[in-house]
Image 1 (cartoon, rainbow, N blue to C red):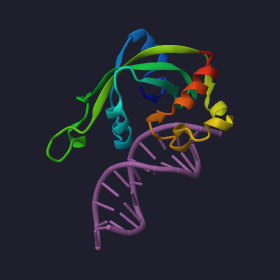
Image 2: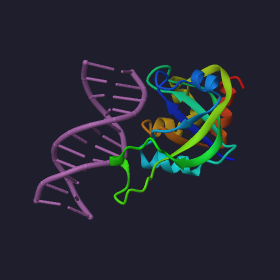
Image 3: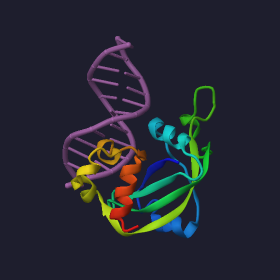
Length: 143
DNA sequence: GCCAACGTTGGC
DNA sequence: GCCAACGTTGGC
């Protein structure tokens, strides 16, 4: 089982909304690196849920319910030249909300979290997380 | 609102 | 295939 980090602007799709919805298709990813991570996801994988722009904190966990399927929201100009669709979605559900959100500031100041993709590749919306990082983050979050 | 980082596009 | 220009993301 693998660990991931999903980033979302809370006013676009918040963790609270995921908890209300019960599940959602993680669509709209148009970056090949992020797409590759989506394709590698398997049901049962877990993810940290990070609020970007507002909040700037990991607020809880999510679980991958269903692996990659074609992203039908991709517009024509984003398809391959032969018309095939390179973009995928995964289906995610809520895991456990953190008792205390772990802020970006905390991550930046934690000696063992310096190599997190969140700091190195801050613009990447779907990122891998190591088991050690997962343990530290969930512990900091009060789980 | 600004700017740095980085991916993508297009001219050569 | 290189690189400048441009667009987007996201922290501050």
